Length: 317
Image (cartoon, rainbow, N blue to C red):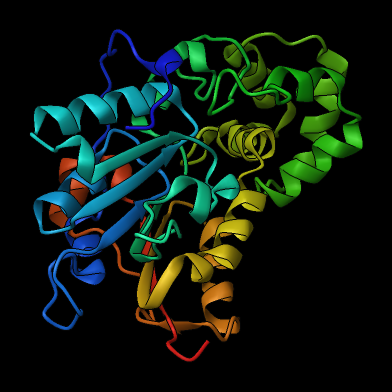
């Protein structure tokens, strides 16, 4: 595998249950009689704990390239796939933001040394359960942790603390409105400015609660939920990366190859829906998004908001 040695070592506890796995496999068809040959090569741009990659390989895929920003996720995926008996020749893992993927550099190559296009690509967007459940990562306000929120803790990116403590208030209003769709964005941003410096997730959550009207504090979701989502998206430049993926994926696929994207909030889903409908290289296979079954939602409550959209690369483009 191409996992850098600096990412190897002790494998931490890392449990992430991949969502819509059966539906993804059904659409990507790793064992399809309609293909020139059974098996095929697949790209998992958010490998996480290896759930989608493992099922693809168990259901007939010949090879999988897996990417992830988070080195802990890559270590977990490597351990899980090795424990399942997946040989190294079938798997290539990269510590990489999928926006930086290069088929020639990171994919498998043919006898002429050219990158082999994929039969299918899966993208499971958003934050993983281990990231949410680790206070030191700073993604959740349920337990106190540093305001970090970087999916790659070693990345040279502004942290959430950098954003809330140093960015102009107008920048905060902008991301809270665009990425959090927060109606009290202006009030919250000004209260954050007045409360600086803020160092922990619980400090920020308390400031947000103080900023919103009392009635808004008793809503279905915690008042800080949309603010934390907005900061996470801004810190990791998630929507910019998704736009790059949607634009570049057709060049990584064989004609007829499929892209399956799982999103967890409306901003991502709208981008995917718009790209699939307006880019002539795509043929939409899911006119309406596929959602988890009631059984899956009961088993994994975090799957409730997941939406799967799939499109195929048109043969003529």
